Length: 390
Image (cartoon, rainbow, N blue to C red):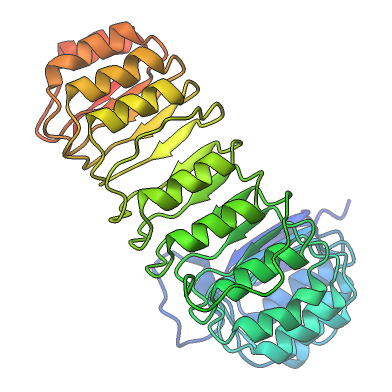
């Protein structure tokens, strides 16, 4: 029975998925023991031609800035190919055109941190695959607000898009995507230029958007947060880590408007001085609040208003003491993890009480300098909780 084919002296099974960490050019660094040094573009082309039942191809770090004759027509053999990932690769518009002309049943395309291709190449490819549900263009720095408007007419079926590290993209792109992509549920725009430029004239509510990952945008501000909460009333996940322009006013506006929030990541938002809640957050399960100026009163209000909280990260929250921690332990009956690293005003004497008072706890990270003894660690483990050194 034919179960495979030879490639560069090795036997490759006729699998439904191929993952190849490939170095296709001598300019790439080579690591000892890495199979990348043995695989080149002609090997990739042979693999594609010989495995017509391929569903997914993941090729990380390939070097095909120009097309060799061996590649011509190769993708037309991959009649079942649904997912193509070329992350961290040197690719050309010519390669993208070959993929476009192959007429594949493609629904997932990842070009994260790729180089050498241009707007023309991605435009032509996306025009041929308007059924794509998943698109990752992280680091495509040639993209700007106007080019996204051009591409968005092909985004009718997108549910996920990643435009992180596209530094020319502003508010215009974020709100145009939410207004023009009716099926979009997850948007990643970290390290872009959000907070700059005015909002589009026509703002459209999109109840399908569930997750916004907008971290490391220093210009992102409360006004943008308020607009996002209006446009995405069913938001479940919000990540604005290291967004120094946001204050508690903007965060509270989101929380009041988006009652479905399950995960809130506001770590290192220097403008958030405290977070005192006077309304219920019945769905919140994860709160990442590392490095905030939150105090015991704010922490106690979180404990009272967030009954389903299961993970709480307070690393570096220097204003928190044992009193605030007690408020969370008493009220959050589903709490599983708490990180107190660098919370140097929290006494470790409270840990035993925490473990015994809240049976749901599975992991506690102690303040720095606190090291549980072997007997203490075993005692806590017998109660189902791992207590880690801070």
